[in-house]
Length: 272
Image (cartoon, rainbow, N blue to C red; front, side, top):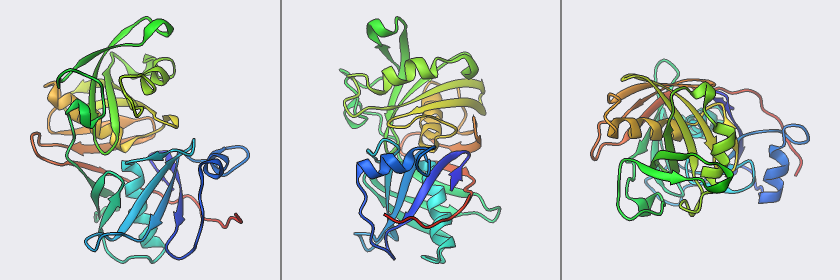
């Protein structure tokens, strides 16, 4: 499946037993010798009675991720297609809290991504005090110092505002920010171009994956950062390489709402 070109291998671990490990996931993610995907998503039974499923996410390098917004939309489509539920609204357990997904009449899926965490310790990000923007030096490998926003929307994100995403140093600076020592658990890196108060363009270098055509949690992080900076309204159209998402956030203690499509590409059987 894919959400705006952010592609996923979906695995049902409720009706079949499968043992996954980082080596196998990395082999399967290879686009020439394996299946090819940005993330592998698994459907598991919930541990809590107030949840419908447990949602686990593995990056292409075999590491586990805490959250994936595009994947959550695909998750709802997958479990309905597979007959694992008939509900149009489901509650998912993740390693970093619960999220809710709702299927709209237009076929798009809205995900309640929860509240953003802005305290440095909750990102996590090494800083003396919380700020809207931080200065981040990349060291001798890259001479520029970036002004970034650091926040957690289920997983850690750094958002960098750039004049134009087409010329942004995504592949040069992205890996250096991703593994910067001030982000002890690594970070997803978003490069945001503000088009207007209601629209941004975004490219994301994802932790453990590289640049992807879309990143739902990255879109959420960018909009929250822009609202905190005072340059965006509370509902924003986010143009990614793979398409558009609508992100809404009312500020303060409000949760982030993300709306967009989820598409099935094909299904198959694999002997492991």
